[in-house]
Figure 1 (cartoon, rainbow, N blue to C red):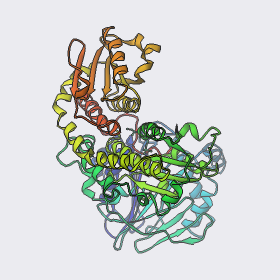
Figure 2 (cartoon, protein in one colour):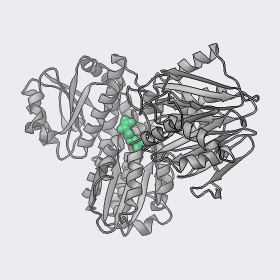
Figure 3 (cartoon, rainbow, N blue to C red):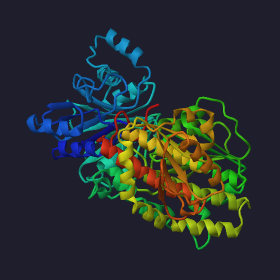
Length: 609
Ligand code: AGP
């Protein structure tokens, strides 16, 4: 959601902060601001509504200079998007940026008003600024004031604070909202995501829950929840900062769609032996755990949940009981935990608040072990799960998830295979077949990408529509869900997915010439049933757009447009058929002129509940 960048250096930090904010803009972007302190203790603050570009332009007119600074991109939660509500928030000499939500902000606000503090914004963050200012009066240091402050906060926060009177350091605290410390040479940084700091460093320390830290040019001192000094592992990031550039592509989303063959190759690399999935790639004790597994619980949100829906079918096809649930539901109900049940969270970011909360809760609920399928090394879910399987898709910047989804499915296909083999639910021959199909995936996806022009032509038909339906059956129903999610989030066209057999139970009433119906039709045992469902649409004047296997022998005609994809196996079909739906959504959004990479109201990493 919101993004944080901070830096302490000898040089002027404003350019580092602006570059960092630009790299975080995809996370949240209704306003942005920074505060910079120079050697003399003069603090300059600048805030602007809109994109980081507005702030950058404003800096040309009103430059702020200095070696210590904090900056923020905001995605409004408390208080409308406005310059007044943009961060940093200031109380006297103190300036604060904050991600997350302070749940007891109303109580604190009243207490602080009683102490004479005047609030000038509608944000929950402003209470942090005033509280620190208040605590600083009696504390021996800014760090101690922060420790006293966080002891009073309820909710989630990643926060960075500067004090004009002590210009050479930042203090930071993390609880429920990620923060990473970047190590430079003679300068250090903090950010809510390592992507922000890749131009200046590749050496990172992730703060853990409850940590506070003091960061100067030469030192980083971290203290745990109880105030004890702690060491956090220093990691070298292998992310290339080019990964966060669009290159020749018009949008990150398009770049990321076209990166899928390489991303899937990376997901597979080193994890397949000749004919097997390497079970140890899930963790050194994975074999022992997997051979005891009797059931699976998958938890995720959004696109990652759709990946879980596909995997449920795969697990149950192998005779392994599997449930899948949206994290925001799972965390608020009493779930039944079967014996020897493996908990699997699926998340691109590894920081999604609901999924992370579900993982934490589930730890107390008697699951035998936890595994996360995740794309961000060092993220909270990776650190807090017993096992982690990285999807290795590379940085995904577009808010609409594309390569993260297809690599999640690739990873989940490997997980299903590994668990099924450990439990003798799959023959060696079947495993060999799946391994060979997985290896063919990048090539199959390249073939689909070559159909881009044909898909662009279809997109013309959607751009003036207000509603659409997506149909699929079996493992293709979640792919219809994913296609509908993509279309609605980037083109703002209302899109609903239905298991095609459900049509006649209600949604058929919606069918007319203004309701395009997209169908994913691979050559599987449900094909004939699906064809009947398509006839139901056609007979009522609906316009069908079908992505099909040539063996299905579906031909275009009155009310039906067909794009044939390459022949593909049942198990790989969900992965391959996702790609044309991504391209369709992209092209429709392009025609409609929406903000493809940063669709309205959405943020990439949903770190608040
Ligand atoms: C999909 O395009 C969205 N960006 C969204 O649904 C996303 O998948 C969801 O917020 C979960 O995020 P995660 O995978 O990082 O946990």
